[in-house]
Image (cartoon, rainbow, N blue to C red; front, side, top):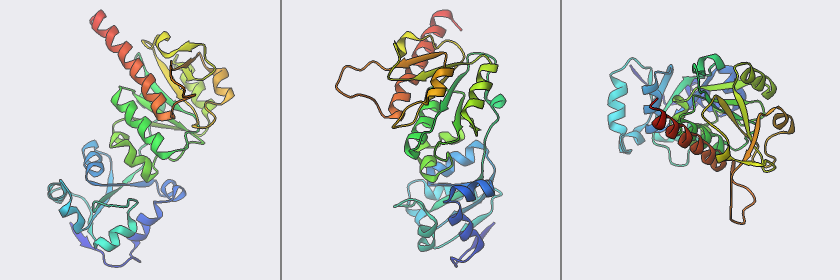
Length: 274
């Protein structure tokens, strides 16, 4: 069923605008996803969609006509608005004319855990939404079974973070902890090793055995992992570098280490016929 909205004072328009703010996203337990790819991934994931909003811009966007036909055949609340109104609610410079408002979908750590060989990513005060989104996307690509976001990190449901995940926000379980100490306590209770990135580490990433249950800790872009987390860690590791750069971007560093974990695990499974 499709309904037309023509006024910026409409409650639906006001609600979408409010979801640009973290406090309102969490208060309303909702966030929005923009763009053809994002909405497609959202629908395929089976997550609860509150409603969809589109404008004529969608029809001139690659894949837009097909997506509109697809959602029209399903039992969604759909609102049609003008391009001008869509630009008011959009978070992008070049909107594609489609967005979905969906419910927050956080997991308890128990829901993300496997019977063995868990591979989790624990984030300590990651501030940049692009970095957070890229880390989630990388975790998805390299087989992590969960990403733990803690208090002090940028909001995982920030529109820029959502875009940066390129749909992976719907593929990887996201676990939230108000205190990173509690996250580490629970990880240790499940016999999951805490492996932390640190420039002061004596071991390189390739010297650690990733064929076990572990959680990789990625720290703040400027100050790295907090001292209390390093003290609670089972291993500190660093990435070998031969150039003049002192460090890597948090998202890049996490990608390098996650790839090493995937490489080791793939090699182990191939040679042990698992």
